[in-house]
Length: 136
Image (cartoon, rainbow, N blue to C red):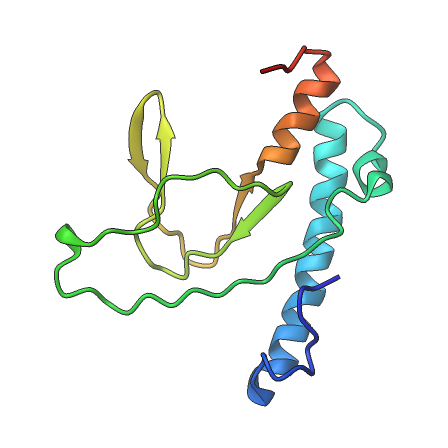
């Protein structure tokens, strides 16, 4: 269920229809990704869909105006995404980085591309399926 009602006062009237259409397409993408991840994990293609692990959806829009001094700007602090999967559109805006082998690597935007970020919940499921003993 989307975290807000499309007819709520949180969504401007002008944005309701495009956002509703966007959610339909993202839901289709989610279904396809569920099947592909299931198969990649060596499971039945409907496994993740049946678990309903990606049923919760959250639509977030960030707007960062151009910074006059980007070399001194502080962006979002480092973090992992607690969800199962994050689908990100960079919208031709630089700034996304990933930590790879103890170094921050820039991920340049690719026009029209979506980035699928594996969330904490998918990583936990993967470790569980491998039979690893997760403990504190």
